[in-house]
View 1 (cartoon, protein in one colour):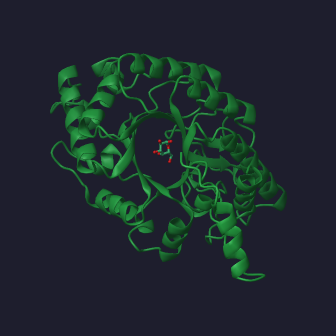
View 2 (cartoon, rainbow, N blue to C red):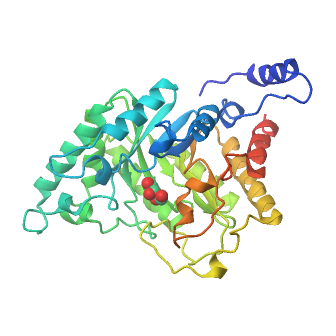
View 3 (cartoon, rainbow, N blue to C red):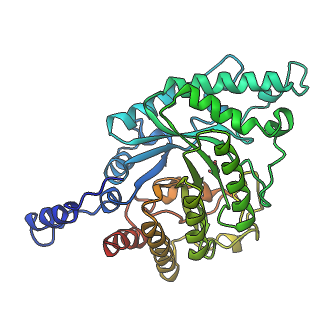
Length: 374
Ligand code: GLA
């Protein structure tokens, strides 16, 4: 990645020209411009002009965007012969206009994929060739449409179980284990210049990580162009440890793939389950003890969150040569899926900006980590 040694001086110069007390607002993308891209997952109101405050914040802070939902199969390709490209077109347009690195998420996943994809007209499972043909048509239509504009694609999401074995998804059951290789081949054919990623959660746990490493090595030995791995990064205050993150990045770097943190957020709420999996189908009943911060986050937890983000970013900076991008899953705490997962109706605080778009202490901690790492 290009290093720009001048930037800290320019920053100080601009700050001093503005005079005392009017220091230029630091931004995430500037603070990390020598290290990696900083991204955020967007929903439609944030690039459609419905929420000018959030749009301004996104333009100021981020140089990469991911689509929260609008490129998932059920959203972009709801029926066998029907595609809904309008929101995705506007998302891509927003990224192009603002010179951002645009991510595509996601081509092949077992969730948020309509049932018809795997079934014939009678509701029976389709055969391998039919499903491969549907996969190819989908990938060619979607990747092809944004060729040269979407710079990187999450090609396959969550293909592994917690033990690092291939998950028994409909893709696996109908096509067989080469469905992953096929998805990457089709995506590469559709846009040879796009970076292609394997994306998953809990890869910081060694059993799952070993499975991902074996999978990626096997694909690469067959000449399949896997450019990077996405660590989703749905983290908690006590998981993963900084050592686990450090070892994980190191392990993927050693097999020659780049690492992206693709869906970073930090759950500070009491756990509803001991599982570390970010399985979106988990759903536990709401109880008052699971939702303790409805009137604001206590200062002690706010400080823990800030320290935790600083510690994690210190690891990312250490590995800046192997980390290409760090993307937050949402912009402000109000956007976060953690308000509704794995318990619906909670008040969550996982991101760097509060519900009024104001930077939290965690934001300052992340900016400080960039500066002290220089
Ligand atoms: C997974 C998916 C994302 C998103 C999050 C939760 O991590 O990859 O697209 O659905 O769950 O919002």
